Amino acid sequence: MDPPTDHTLHISREDLNYLTATQRRLHHNRHQHNHPSTPSSSSTTNTANSGGSLSLDPQALAALSNHFDALLAAITNRVETLSAQTVRSTQASHRRAGGVVEAATVEIETLRDVLRQCDELQNEFLKIRRIGEIVKGFRARVDALERRIGK
Image 1 (cartoon, rainbow, N blue to C red):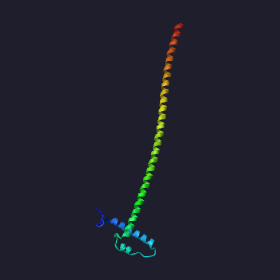
Image 2: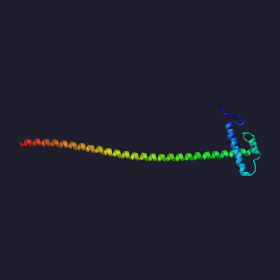
Image 3: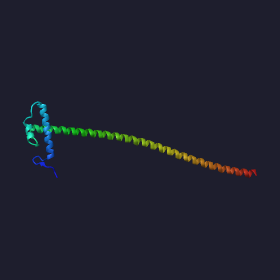
Image 4: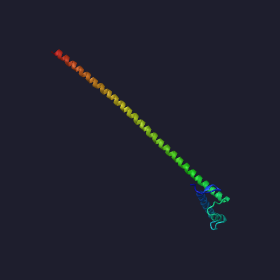
């Protein structure tokens, strides 16, 4: 169920209470800065007597508007700061990831080179084994010829 609203301003009771409290605080702060030793003026009495209603005098509305403008500026500034920090963090992560990828690429190429050299060595060993078999065949023939001649 929706909270009760002030039908003339279309403001929820919660928002109206917040605006009224903020307006009182701003009026109180302004009054203390302008007249630190003087009791509050009739506009404070107006706000206090209204029992939570929003004062619509131009000075109170201007103070409230300035307060919310400052609040909005502070929020905007914080969002921009967080956004910039997020961008810097993302860029740093991207650079680190790029470095890792580059290092991994170099290592992969090194491994491929080592594997290629291993394949070449294996081929050389196969050639040596084949030469060994050929030499054994020649020895067997030489031995057979020696036996035939030596007889």
